[in-house]
Image (cartoon, rainbow, N blue to C red):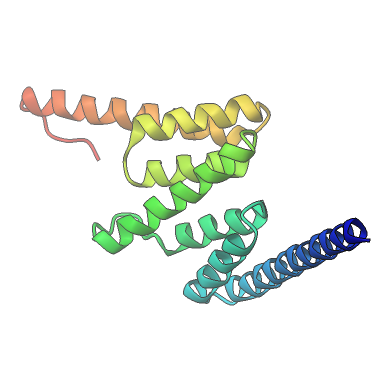
Length: 172
């Protein structure tokens, strides 16, 4: 009899834990949906909070993490050299990398990182990620274009420096 009671108690506990886990996943999806609505309405800070909550409730919910990274990236303003702005880019990159740790073939995360590095003028890092995007999706012309743009930018900068050394005027 004692053994039966222990087995039933164990089964009851397992059912309660399973139900709680299911409830947590539903709450995570609810926050994901609320975050998407906030994002669509350009309420990015509110969206970020919903996505963060969704990720904390269900760390395996990759869509929430991708949206979180995208919302951080949306807050980033290229060329604005403030610590807060830099933090948005860093947070977006960190979230995209967490997605890639689980799904290395997630081309949107790879391209998201590449784009942010490009905007920060971290050309070597950007080129590395755009090349990864080419490996994942060799039919996407955008990644090839971005690599070519980086190469042209670096060559143009070098050319202008050499022209300046020779006393030649800059070309616009």
